[in-house]
Amino acid sequence: MTIDEIKNVILEIIQDIDDEADLDNLDPTEALRDQLDLDSMDFLDIVMELRKRYQIQIPEADYPHLATLDSCVNYLVPRLKAA
Image (cartoon, rainbow, N blue to C red; front, side):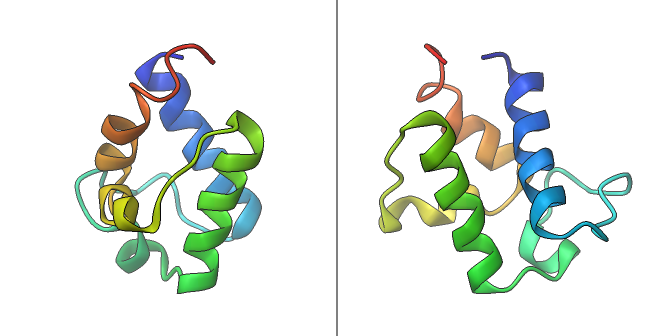
């Protein structure tokens, strides 16, 4: 998967979780939870959807790597190369 494809997948998952999320004004370097008012269950839903769609394991210790859109992409690129 390309960087843009991964970014689009993350945004699609967020949109599915919160259909009122303002993704047009999202700053890719700022924390997703702060910008989109995501709670811990929303965040876990994102992780679980990534696991379900791509059969990747994301250990809880790695959750800080998923804080921003850019950090999510950077974390997922090597894990989704074959997807």
